[in-house]
Image 1 (cartoon, rainbow, N blue to C red):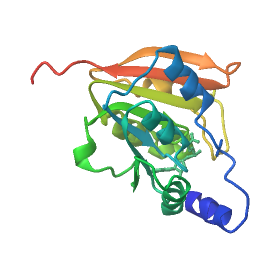
Image 2 (image 1 turned 90 degrees about the vertical axis):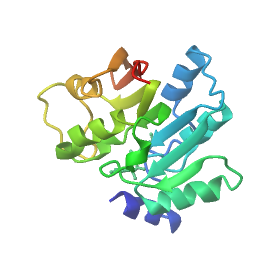
Image 3 (image 1 turned 180 degrees about the vertical axis):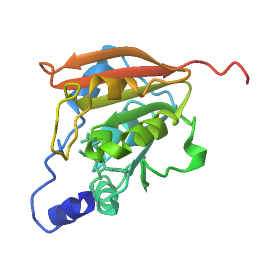
Image 4 (image 1 turned 120 degrees about the vertical axis):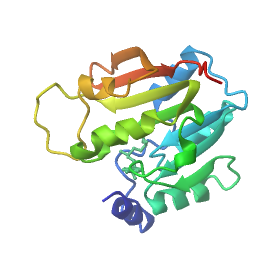
Length: 197
Ligand SMILES: C[S@@+](CC[C@H](N)C(=O)[O-])C[C@H]1O[C@@H](n2cnc3c(N)ncnc32)[C@H](O)[C@@H]1O
């Protein structure tokens, strides 16, 4: 579905409805509130689409990777930012490179899990959480759904319990906010330092 939508956009069919054309305000606001500076640390943007969030993180000084499973989105990002320092890659949340595990100081997940069928949510959440490095941070942005409410997706907005699922083991929820008049979740999680190293 996503590849088809990006492909349609290529041939003048209108831009994908989620494409904000700029970094997500909920990410920008979060970054500004903590004077976020990458300082050469590694960031990863999940389901990066045309790359606006990834380009924002590069400007903050992160060495940034952005991935999406739609090849046309990745081709579009590379074309849109020809001089970009972002490493744009085609990859699937459900089958990520093993060497990415524990590798990223900042992982940004915005609206990707909820775009996936509900039966994939738990694995997707686990796979994304596994990417966060020791002392790293995960930012999750999603639209909200009440517990036990039916929804005919896509998308399948996340319940509080689904957002809380990102927290497991030493990846702990620092802050879970309900923003935009209750319409969005913004969750910040962090992984403890690895004491075995
Ligand atoms: C609703 S869009 C959100 C795009 C962007 N993150 C944002 O916030 O605007 C969902 C994105 O996730 C990508 N996506 C969906 N399922 C994926 C998967 N299994 N692996 C990687 N990317 C996926 C889609 O191609 C699409 O670009």
